[in-house]
Amino acid sequence: MPPLSRALLAGFAGLFLVAPAAARITDPELSCADWLKTGAHRKSEHSATVAERIRAFCAANPKMKAIDAEMTMTGD
Image (tube, rainbow, N blue to C red):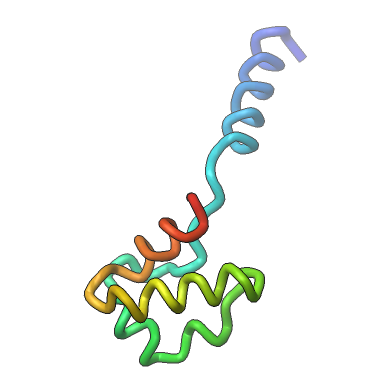
């Protein structure tokens, strides 16, 4: 493999390792109130502590987008 190809491959691999984790709430238009109503919070892939923080944050900010609440609580 030519050195330039190796450098490009290493660069792309580095980008994937450094990029923040993808949000687990996938609907960008879903409000916190709707997210809580649908029961999607019960199937969270987050640890119990983080999931509880997201639920509490959403309960306090029902008009906020659920994906933004998740990103706020996880730091992504």
